[in-house]
Image 1 (tube, rainbow, N blue to C red):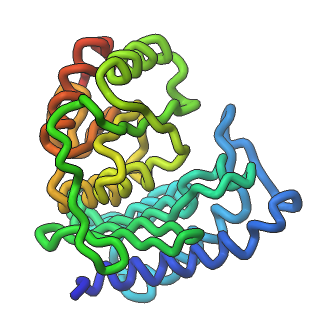
Image 2 (image 1 turned 180 degrees about the horizontal axis):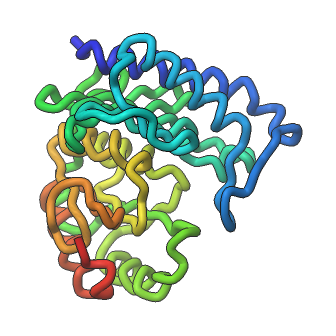
Image 3 (image 1 turned 135 degrees about the vertical axis):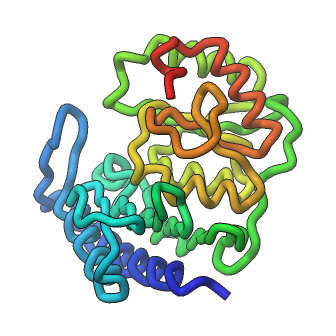
Length: 267
């Protein structure tokens, strides 16, 4: 049975998903702001985040919150980390691949996580020590033994173009061994798909906490591993993330570590 925190987070994610779907056919009329170069936020992001915060506040008024759009609200050991619309670029272009991501962290460690795909009605959930689930069915990472034949997900974040050359070198090294690489535009769903065994692994540069907080818990509870580019376990402060089953994650650390710059290998 899901923990109460997961039940609340799932309800909040579904409420946000309803808002996202409601505006899908009205994208041309949305108010869209460019926060910084190539970083867009729409009124849907803000409405969805407000709905999530309302639901969380109703159940847990004393918990701190970190939202992509709202920033940090309150302080304390328990903090909800929210991405109300992960894949905004996809959404604004009518590409049907985006999600809602909500995680509860205790002193920086993910305890509960939810990633919701409102288009496919797929709800990915996990609680620390309880396993990971897709619509109440247990999930496990893939059994791939190495990068040979692996399907790997990645992203090319607009904020990290200064690292484009080493990123392409890392991608080349991975693709030289793997079956193929996918770049879908939603880090939370990439991690959820890795937890479900759809992808064998995932890596990306410069993620924010709300991009990965729920997804990394899904991977861990599905029997996988997440670490930084140097192989240090845990949520990387650098945002440079590797995730996958134990064998593929190790192979990715080796391939990426041989091509990453010293800056990208820092903790």
